[in-house]
Length: 271
Image (cartoon, rainbow, N blue to C red; front, side, top):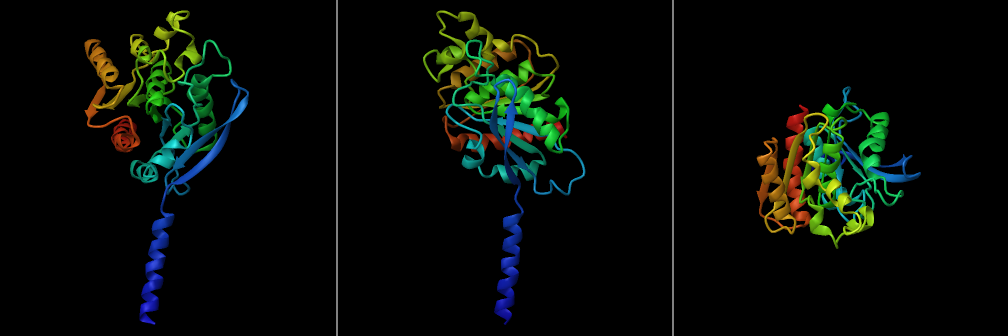
């Protein structure tokens, strides 16, 4: 009997542990700019329904060939990190190879508008959020790292902080890769697009409001030299930012580690 009681108590605590996780929603957001519904993952803290205030939000972008579920599938510890940092994480589907542009050559790709305006509007309407740039940050990996800095800089009236992990920050590196030319045109025909849409050049135009910046890259990553060059450019421009180099390649083991540091950085900004 005593052993049975102990087992019941053990199972009770196991049940509490299992249930004490952040909640993962998958919602569909209608894009007026692209005239279709697009899936988005939302991760809420465990105490979301009990908390009477509003949460800050980190918009977390996936990489090339990915989708909205990449982050939560590959880094399930995001649920724990959401609880630890007391924020929401929102992962919109950015398409197979959108690069988070409003494509100047293909009207079916309006992912800059979708991520910078349509998704935040939906999230603010349906969730308990801080409905102000002070409560929003945006970052991502690889293609999404470019998107984080690109959208953050160009929409600093909507986001107070931005970041990148292993970002493809210089599009000239990807002239014949990752479908960039399909989004902004052949570089020999549309050379200005390659300048206008590359983070390496976007940072030359001061954002609408001061924005907090963090980005990092593994030293064995094929985007490492581009990220290092961006850091050096920002230093020369006297733009405040946090830049981190650490061992690592272009892979999930690196990003699952990097996101912990970026969320801590954003938490410091939010709180």
